Amino acid sequence: MRMSFCRRCGRITLRSFIYCPYCGMTLQAGPGMADATALPFERMDAMQAEFRARHIDEMLDVLDSLESDVEELLHGIGAPS
Ligand SMILES: [Zn+2]
Image (cartoon, rainbow, N blue to C red):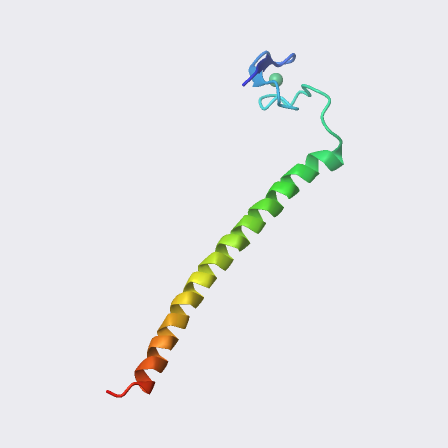
């Protein structure tokens, strides 16, 4: 992590910070508004996609066990006891 100092309050900040977290001073020319908002939304989309994928995997697992349950049931009904 690369450190930097705020020109206004003199505290240590990260060089990647656009604003000083202590006093709000602009530390560097930040990306435009569209760029600044695009990344969080991209991350959110990625997280949602990941969540959906995991959810689908879970549902497929449940479906698999249901399927084998049904197969067992049908097998049980068909077989002479
Ligand atoms: Zn500051």
